[in-house]
Length: 110
Image 1: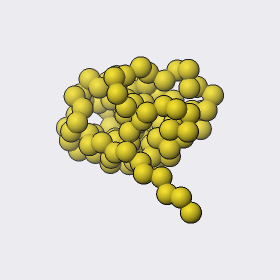
Image 2: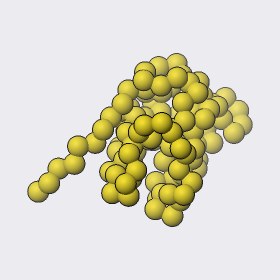
Image 3: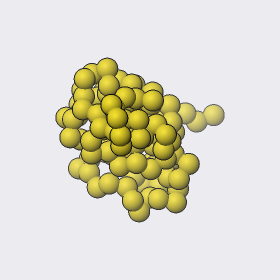
Image 4: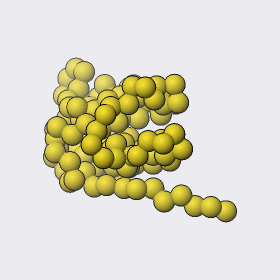
């Protein structure tokens, strides 16, 4: 059985204004997200590859805790997209005191 090494990066690697791919569900996104994140839920990723943000180097991918984003990183790799999993996800982002925005109300990680 082959194992896949998933590249991971700490939230401390990025500034609050970093461009991230957020693969959480819509209800999680509206609760709070990184200011420059691009939202493409994991289930829609195969149909929205053209919507991926352009970044220098590996595309940081985030979800709530890092599990779904790790799956997204593996999938993106099969599509020839260099990506890295943001370890700890948006929970780690929030715990690090990084900026959050919400569609309405006080932003929080759902």
